[in-house]
Image 1 (cartoon, each protein chain N blue to C red):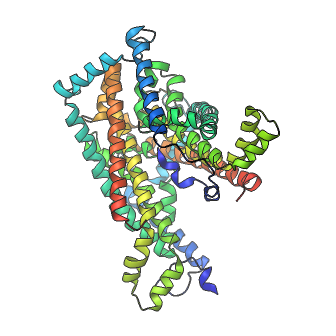
Image 2 (cartoon, each protein chain N blue to C red):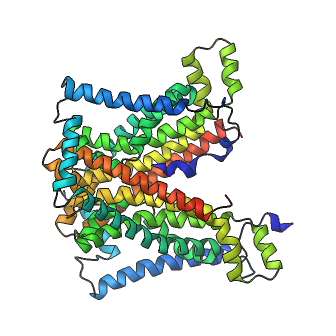
Image 3 (cartoon, chains in turn purple, orange):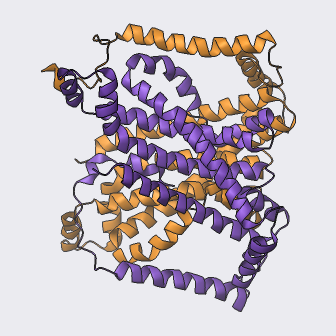
Amino acid sequence: MAQFDVTAPRSHQAGVVRLPRQPGRGWLVGGVTIAAALLLWYVLTSLTGIISSYRLPSPPEFLAALRQIAVDGYASGTLLQQTLQSLKIVIEGFLVASLVGIPLGFLMGWSRRVEALLNPVFLLIRPIPPLAWIPLAIVWLGLGDAAKIMVIWFAAFVPSVINTFTGVRQVNPVLIEAARVHGATDWRVAKEVVAPGALPMIFTGLRLSLQASWTTLVAAELVGAFLGLGRVLSLAYRDIYPAMIAVAMVVIAIAGALMTLLLARIERMVIRWH
Amino acid sequence: MALSVDTRPATRWATTPSSGELASLSLAGAAIFFGGWQLIAMSGLVSQYVLPSPLAVLEQIYRLEAEPFAGFLLHQHLLSSLERFLLGFLLAAALGIPLGLIMGRYRLMDEIVTPLFEAYRYVAPLAWVPFAALWFGTGIGGPMMVIFTGAFAPCVVNAYRGAQFVERYLIEAAQTLGASNLRIMREVLLPGALPSIVAGLRVSAGLGWQSLIGAELIVVSSGLGYVMVQGQSNLAPDIVMSAMLVIGVVGLCIDVALRAAERWISRRWGRV
């Protein structure tokens, strides 16, 4: 996912020398590529049977599985119920993590003392991959929603703290001093200078943590759940039902993309000046 | 004037905290965390089947190394995890970096691959687990594919960006001197893109390590992830936590090694 956005070396952002694109050509080539890929899929599976349907489902099988889960349901729920369940948990976990992570990152950026105090614990949590919390969450909280929210919390917490922290530290100190010279209180400096300055980084953190939440939720549901898209995946795997696996993967991709787009739109609304 | 070099946000404490004060605060933070954890675990408020003490976790690591758990000793689990990780990661780098460079060099390739690549990128790496297991089995092939899907994207994207930012005149100069496309790729694009590529490798190592753990949780029957699953089904949080600790430390070592490589390469090859 786009976690590498923040690591692009700054020094390289200077010399883009590329001829201007011909407008529309990219869309045309892209459309042809997608069409060719779909055609290739059809030819390899339905038409010639070179790839058996136990390995890759054919387009008709895919559509049949899609109809089955959308109308009759699969893994004890219809497609809509499964998707809503997954989305609900992701948003809950993401919100709880942001509500804790952003203020904490802000405090750590604001005060070196708070940073020093909290850093050891943070250094311990940070290298542990979010997915590694899944077994512990199951031991502590069982297979229900609470365990998933705990795992998502760990996935989303780290990026939101780090990026908020970095954003606060990157605020130009001259601006802060200038506000102080004019007699601004701590509260006003935080609210009117530091917070707006840190906002772009905070949103970068939110985007990364939303993506991490979604990836992690799918994994957590694969390991054990009663409902949700990951549950559909794991049941389809156990039933050796490749068409349903493919349906679940496509829905996971589309839902993930839509959430990212929605967040980007909110970001543009909030940060008008950028 | 000191103002322009001081990156510290002004706080109500006008003095800069001394490094000694900061170090003792860090020490206090660690002591509060581990001390509190140890006390809660010893007090009997929560059972050891819920929260083992930090010392019990360390002791458990020792025990996992002394007697086999889930079929193997701890270092054998670690080695089998590392083997899968390295194979998947190297495969992702070997395919992703050339693909990214080619996409950065030839616009037609860029336009052809981008829509497919975007579609793949939105699928969570772990969602590939069922197909990976169906296609390549649950031994080494399936987990390798899951690591590959996790690690592939940053390799491509960073090689692509790196290649795009190579100055056009360098490529044209090489062309004028009669260099073949392969030589341009190897001797102009690759060194020019190297700092960006190594940054991408670091990200992809992190994602690959994480995907490996996920894959081992779900389908594999050895490795650190499997130790955690077994600990979970035995209701032994001390085993789960020891495995988490080992996973964290190994991930940290991988990251530190690649960070050192990144610094070394950007000193050696980087241009501003």
